[in-house]
Image (cartoon, rainbow, N blue to C red; front, side, top):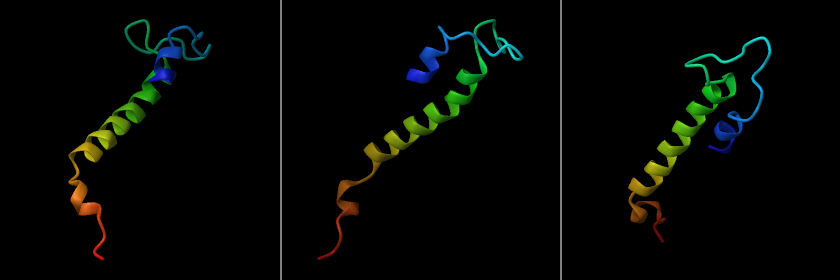
Length: 57
């Protein structure tokens, strides 16, 4: 999320400029899949049954 926010104050790449809606840069576009994947993994961790991870003794 930090990378996505930093891209608002960073000057976009000269050869690319803004790619969408006049404010979205390549860095933001590339950060979105990582943010989504991270949120999915957090959701999976909360959803997972804690007793399933205990090893049989």
